[in-house]
Image (cartoon, rainbow, N blue to C red):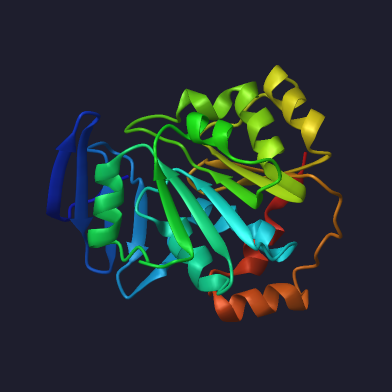
Amino acid sequence: MLKKGEIIHHVRDTLGSILVIDYRKHRVLTFNSVFEQSKIDRRRPHVPVHEYNRAMMLPSAFASPGHVTILGLGGGVMASAFHHLYPDCQIHAIELRQAVLDVSRGFFDLPQSSRLTVSIGDARDVLERLPDASTDMILADLYNADRMSPAQAQRMFINHCSRVLGATGWLTLNYHRTPDPEGPYFRQIRKHFPVLLMFRSKTNNTVIYASKQPFEALHERDPALQDLEKRMPIDWRRLMAKVTRL
């Protein structure tokens, strides 16, 4: 929820308002609603602030991606985090609105880098055109001002994500409400991904992790988590402790 802050930028496009609001320590992107689309620490813009954003990075503990696809750029929080965490990783972000990309570059320190490509368009259309097995990790966070994009809840969307991911790929999905684990959507996910995990955030976001391959579970004292903590201080061990199997 938004608290009182200073609006430092406001722009409109055909889909509505985009506001940038400064607080004492943080900067927020919102689409003129009660929801924060993105939030950064102004001193460390590459470190995600929202717990669900941090949780979306947890597959990094099991696989070091050479290529990451991000669906829904927002303020560029995920793109900046992966760009910092993996110096050799190629990142492809897909964003519906050019104005959002402009704001993320102008106000959220989105890296200007040969390793980061941004496509403007509907994520479903761009996904359809991507080559088979062309990415190692997909992070889907498709939201408009007040709800999740219906595209993210379609079975065809899951089919395309599976096709685009490599044989050891991970799909991470952010939901405001937990889908029915016995419903048709989860049945579709299980067709493509044998291992499903879940994280419930303090704000009741549900992050679903879907892996193409079985993997070794990590103890919270695992050296891999300690190494990640040094490179990106987001309390990986506490986050991992909240992950459950579906």
